[in-house]
Each structure stands twice: as structure tokens, then as C-alpha cells.
Length: 257
Image (cartoon, rainbow, N blue to C red; front, side, top):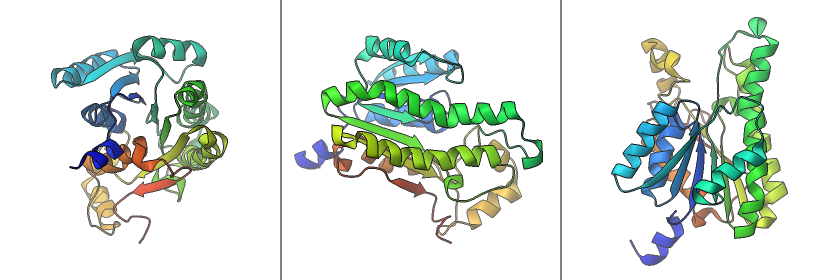
């Protein structure tokens, strides 16, 4: 690869903060971003998983640290930002991958479940980004990458609270872009189709349902984690400097059919 293209897509010497890092998409992207050259700060609740993850990355020559934090709690984001900065400096990249999906029928949604879903899936991405923006602006480089969903665009059974939160993520991404892009901070979102994660385990445990969703795509299969690598690197890299406020579906054409 020529030097220009390497500079265009490299994450070398960048600091990437990734939430939801103990499993699923967040866990996978920690490894991908480390391979692309960034110093990864992994955040999640389960410390044992974070220890295994960061050890795996460092064993392969990457740079990774972690913070065991329950993001669903009422956090002091200024203090959290200080803890993050003490590890590796102010992050250049934020990936908001933490989330929950309680899969409750509409008639069974409780206020507690509703509030917990909106807090982790929608409020945390905003307030965490808000805390990191001054550091990104100071360095004149910021990339905020939210994880949206097919339910940012359409409804699914038993997904009222989750779908509401992910519809909010789509608008939050556009609002972040409008608010902060003039400081060299872009905000974009990835909307995955059906990928094998803890959140989608009920789908993949049901062979008929998994096959049904695969058939609903234009490509004819469900996603594998590697399908997320290209867009995730692109949104975090200098290559996407003039792209902001966009939600890109990585869904095999699910929404196109």
C-alpha cells in the first residue's frame, strides 16, 4: 500500500475509547482498532473479560488498557474523563458500543426497563461524548462512532424500548455532528444487521429465525464480525474527515429489500 493510503486509513498514535468492550461488537472492535495502531481503552462492567481482552491485545504487540465501569449507573463523567486521560491521554476516538435489549412485548414494558434501556443506549453515548469533546477539540481530531441498529429505521417484535433508543441514536448522531463538526470532530453511526453477539443470542439460538433473517438480506446471510471492520476503521480514520452525521447500515441489504 502506498504511503498516502496508509496515512489515510491509519489509526497509529490515536487513543480509542470503546464501551461495551467485554463482549460483542465492542469487544471485537477493540482488537481491530489495536491492530490499526491505536491505543485502546476498553470500558465495560466485567473486569475478568477486560483483563483477558487487553492481555490478548498486548500479547500480539498492541496497546490496550481497561476501566471496569458500570455505565448504567449515575456517573460523574468529568471524573471518568480524568481517569481515562490518566491512562493514555485524551481519546481521539469514541466508539459507543455498550447497550442492552430486554426484548419485552409492548404490553409488558416496565418503567424501570424503559429507563434503563434509554439510559445505557442513548444517554450514556451523549454524556460520554460531551465529556470527551473538549479534548478532541484541543487536538483538532475527533471521531465519535455510535452503534445504531436496524431498529433505528424499522420496528421489530418485542423491541419497543430498544427500538426507541436506537431511533434516538440516529438523531443523536446527526445532532452531535451539527454541534461539534466545526471543531474537527465528526459523528457517525454504524447500523449493524444481525450479527452473533450476546444481544442477538436469542435469534441465533433459533435456527429457523436465524435462517429467516439471513433470507431477508440481499446478500443471503447474516453478518460476521469481520464485516464491521472496514466501516469502523474508515469512520475513525482521516479518510472520513468530510463525512459526518451519517448512519451507515452494515446489514447485507436487509433494509434495501
